[in-house]
Amino acid sequence: MPGLIRRSDIDEVRSRINIADIVGDYVTLKSAGVGSLKGLCPFHEERSPSFHVRPGVGRYHCFGCGEDGDVFTFLQRMDHVSFQEAVERMAGRAGVELHYEDGSGPAADHGQRARLLAANAAAEQFFRTRLGEPDAQPARDFLGGRGFDQAAAERFGVGYAPKSFDALKNALSRQGFTEQELVAAGLLSTGERGNSYDRFRGRVIWPIRDVTGQTVGFGARKLFDDDQGPKYLNTPETLVFHKSQVLYGLDLARRDVAKGKQVVIVEGYTDVMACHLAGVTTAVATCGTAFGVDHIKVVRRVLGDVQNSDASSTGEVIFTFDPDDAGQRAASRAFAEEQRFAAQTFVAVAPDGLDPCDLRIHRGDDAVRQLVASRKPMFEFMIRRRLAEHDLETVEGRVAALRAAAPVVAGIRDRSLSVGYVRSLAGWLGMDPAEVGRAVTSAANVARRSEPRSEHREAPAGEGDAQPTPREARLVDLPTDPVTRMERDALMAILQYPNEVGPALVAKAAETRFANSTLAVVKDAVRANLDHLADGSWLQRVADEVPPGFSTLVSQLGIAPIPERREQVAIYCVGVVTSLVDRDLLRRKGEILGAMQRARADGDREREAALSRESAALESERRELRGE
Image (cartoon, rainbow, N blue to C red; front, side):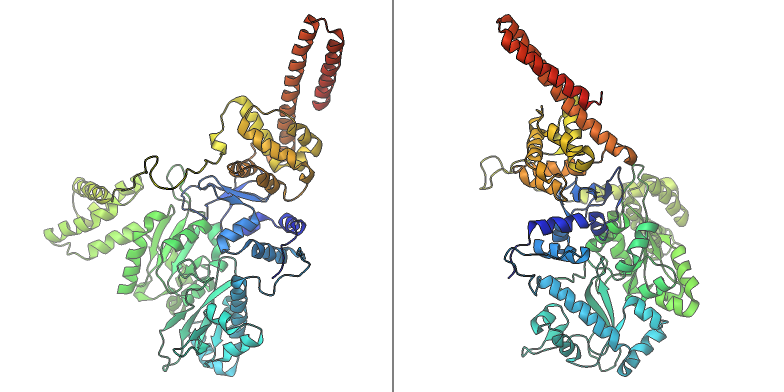
């Protein structure tokens, strides 16, 4: 087992990696001022972005949930890897050779997760190569029949699992993977007698990748009648594959989703391929499970799904469903989670019951694009579904339809949309809008009364064994008086732009007396790390220096946007730190003048003269500081 990675190597890797590039693989980031980016927090659910990234200081911080750290912390939290694995992964990306304290190199196994990813990558290459072999003709025929040529197969990494119980097992064993690793990766299954065999046999294979493009699992479609397995077979749950959190095609669609503010949810692998080939490059699909809450979280982060102050939406989520019973059930499930999106939700149903892949085969690429363009709002789709279940030619049918559709309208959170749908529903039913409005209001009241009440009760003091946790110092809790604001702004400049402020001025600021005791703790940590001012680990070292309860404040000071345009940042930072130092020099001069008066009253001429010289030196220092 290797020793610890040298601190200097860790700092070197950190300095070479742009944290925005890494975070951007998971979260859509937008400009939030000078040197600052923001997006929806990947660690908690939110509608307005409070997750900030500062590439210049290599840190992130969420002002909502408090999560913060550097690029290594981010990877540890997102990908569930160890600190060493995160450093080694980034070192490989940055081209940095790592050295270990005991002189050894990295372990052959950087962790189980890394081995599973490597096994999946090797399996993908094996499947892709086998697609060109003679025995893969049924797979090529299937793809050709679905409208996909060799170029399409290569674009999506489609492959073929040979009709064998050990072809993959033997191939990957020769590459050094153990049977235990292949079982853990879901590539092998285990029989009743404990013997292992290839999980995928005689099937077309699609690699399933995470948002960063790493292959985490596979989807497989059977080809032969003697295959007794399900039509589609996926990788089981593994350390790296969680079907409730993965969307097929998101690695390809993510940039266009973020750019176009649109995502199209389809039902299968071939549907994703058909959409992308037809020009709908924002299409993704679930992998053997219904579209659920975890999928929504992933989509919202990539979409940048936030609610504007005027309650207008920021994008579009378009669901495509088959018109059969299964498709209708899927639509109902999607509608049940609609409120989790700030974006507008739509439904697109192809004519004649065709899914996007069949639509492309029979009517061409333009028909797929038209399917998406002809989408209907989710609420309209669901209301019309409810109406279709009743006979609107009778009074009884119209009343029953109103009772069924009213809760749908009552669930619309946008007031203006709700009013519009009341009028539309009245028109579809041929009823008085006032009567429909009363039914909607009644449905809303019923829904509110049925909401469960929280039974949570805080334990009185003395109950339980838990000890109170010290409250973390936070930026928002600081006083807003002018002196505290100056100290805060100066620390922000020093932590975020130390090189622009300069070592000499930072050193002077570190010797000043702070009025705010909380900020004084951070200032003392700055003073203790002056030798590392130019290091890429500057902010991290300051955060490590402060006592428990202050690291969050350091992160917030290092992330909070600087209130100045980019071209003026250096001038602003020098100016605010200069003002802080000048204020302290003025304070010290005032104290000296008071001491001079006391010395004069005591008749101590020698002390008065010494204090006078000290006062003159301070005034000279002030003029030099101000450039006079």
